[in-house]
Image (cartoon, rainbow, N blue to C red; front, side):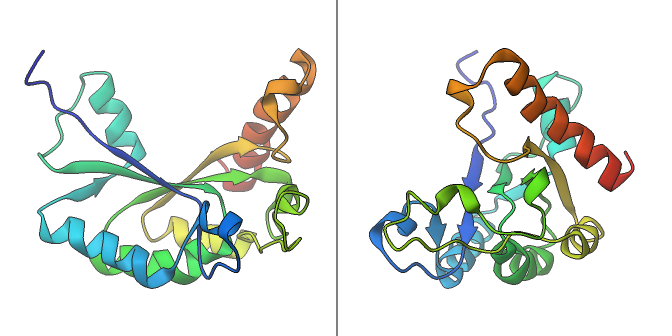
Length: 173
């Protein structure tokens, strides 16, 4: 197994402008994101789809050397505004994990944690539908982005299974 193929998983959150040190832990400026992607492309690397990644994990498919999985957590609008144009240019797929009951709203869960109290817009239904046509895959995150480690079993099921059901209804699959 020493020469087994490895597929890195790159996970981003928000792509946009940061206003303090706390935000910079979860956010990358648009120009830096573009530099990351273009650097990977120059090195011969290429994003693979989530479907291909899982097929690879199950040993049902091989992926070209230099493949990686690109994901975005939480579904921030900046993914549409800043990351999607770069990825479309490179013809690369990506996966976004959506907080299903906050689609089209803001990241309310960060308001207390962010020293400035700022929140940021999340993708709306229109954005999700457009991005799906351009190589983006959408998966469930949770319904409201709670701390899953402190939820009861029934609340945990509600958050996780409920989010999946919400997205199945939204996406029709």
